Amino acid sequence: MESLSIDLILSAFLVFVRVSALVMTAPFFSTSAFPAQIKIYFSIVTSVMLFSVIPSDSVFLSAESGVIFIVSAIILEALVGIALGLIGQLVFAGLEMAGMLISLNSALSFANMVDTMTQKQSAIISNLFTLVAVLVFLSIDGDKVYISALVKSFDLIPINEAEIHLAGPYMLEIATYLFVIGVQITTPFIIVIFLLDVSIAIFARIMPQANMMFIAFPIKVGVGLSLLLLSVPYLPTAFEMMFLQLYDFLAEIIGIIAPGIN
Image (cartoon, rainbow, N blue to C red; front, top):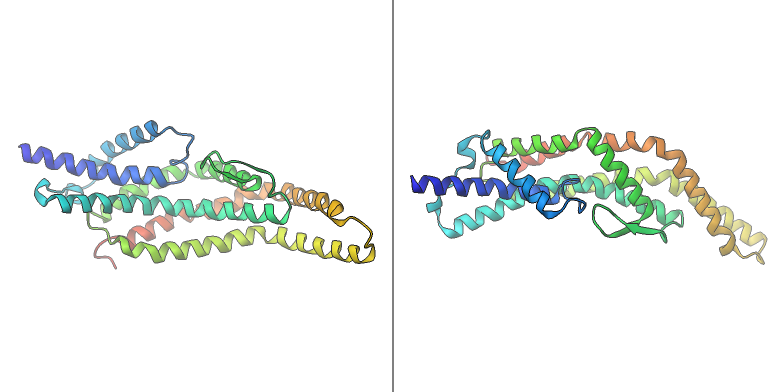
């Protein structure tokens, strides 16, 4: 009976490791706006709820397996949770990169502010994109998508059986795709600002005595803000199209690292 109790505690702890690793890395859940105590409490409550519904053979681990085996299982479960969490972070990273490119091309990169999610300084356009992305993420029940993916991961990936080494190439593939999406979002800005730079260069050749740095800077800022105002109504739709693929990304990576499926 004592051995059984220790086995249950160990199994429950491994469930908590996977859940907490996801909570600490997944978008919205990992935001620094939530204190660490809240994240830990949420992870504990979620682990208790999941432990009662997931198959027992998927989470059972004997305490007699040995210290090295148990430590490796803890590390592996943490890596599984981190892999699932980083999938969503890659989507946000693509949007942040788009905002950074727009800021650089619109001469707005000097205006930085603290990102509420990461507590780091980033371009003001990146902050705008991040805030809109969080609202879209919640509007399409992105948090529920992550919980559903977490439940599915325990169904397909038993404790200490994930083939985590297969996750790297797929995450690179997603990162490449999201880089392309980020560039597509910024393409109208890049084209218009490029044509504006060409026009300013021609004007500088016609009037070499004019102070083009003094003239070009406010023009680029004004054009950039005007394009941003025109594009803001379409941002939620574009972001929603990206987040609707989030569950497919999570399902695919779960299938990739699940044992015996590849």
